[in-house]
Image (cartoon, rainbow, N blue to C red; front, side, top):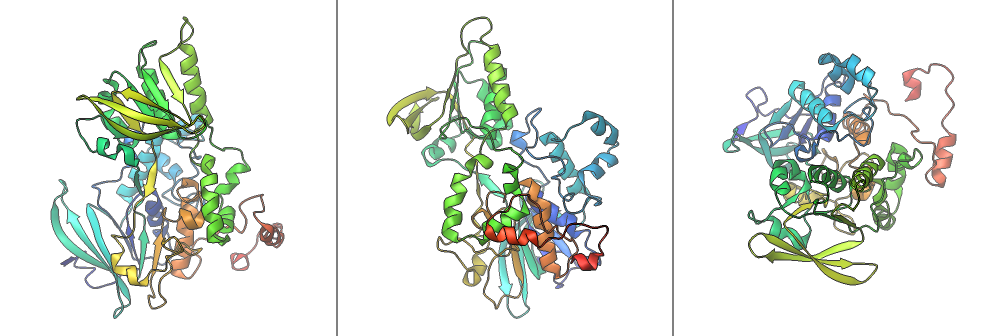
Length: 470
């Protein structure tokens, strides 16, 4: 094996990040600002940064304000903020006059790509294969494969580090009944993550079915609806949820995406957390009210000359099984939960807006399996500082990003908590406080102990020395 570079030969890093999505990119950006320097390096097997390229539809926006960039909510003065990006592109005044609080997804992707191209210590085209604990040296060994532009093996390497940050993200989820169809190239069944790459092929189909009631499903359905001729839309939208429901977006409701709520959720018993997460689906699986309105407006506009659009929207439906009909058509076997009835739907193309699941950490962490502490459902235990709970003999830390929904709640994949989580990790890793964090972030007192904790926060009276704030 070759080492990362001659200069890094046998020298352990302070931190190795695995995966360079928005969350580890946030960690890298904030690590760059740690006073005194932090020896950090990050690996990603992709050739460059890309954020959900298959869903960068024209006009679609983030569901969080632009302040939920990589750094601003803990360090507004960072050179890696979204506003710094606009300044570097001479776009501050156009943005100011545009008065946009929610930026387009394509712009967020461009901003993150700008950071990834400027920030030192990021290594794309590097696939991490294994992580092990070297007890003799008290460091983690991170084995990786360096890939060329075509994804072929170019070299093998190993990095040593005192700490690891896992940010491998999520992967598209395909329901079991549709897996065989989705794996057959001749059949147009695609996940919404790949929608733009297959859009023309999908639009060429006579009848199209969208499965999934979340934001992605709504955006895909709206895009298809706008592209089809009035009266001949031939679209069907299916959802398991009981309604095409709006996402919870009230101000007090959004306080469930604050550090205060995250701390409250983490302190709950495991069985309570497991019961709570499914009930909170409307916090993150609903549809933006603006998108719902746009869909209704588009459907309504197609009734102005009489008649109704050839579009069927059916919630409360489960796809039980699916199969091929002839060479190119598909048959979906449906079940309606409330009616306890079953039917069949024949279609020519299916877009699965069925969400994402956390990538399993088992293959990557097989070398650490003897040290891992698991919960009652055999999931990794994660402490309040986002560290995997390991055997005490392991003196280094393995931090996780977007793999801790079962311990930290529905805010886990939310971009608004990215900078706060990254700062929490860096404060833990350094044993200091390079990023002082707020003591309170919500008006809501979550739990009875939250009331007592909030009473202890004094009202501000002028400037307080940083040492006293700590």
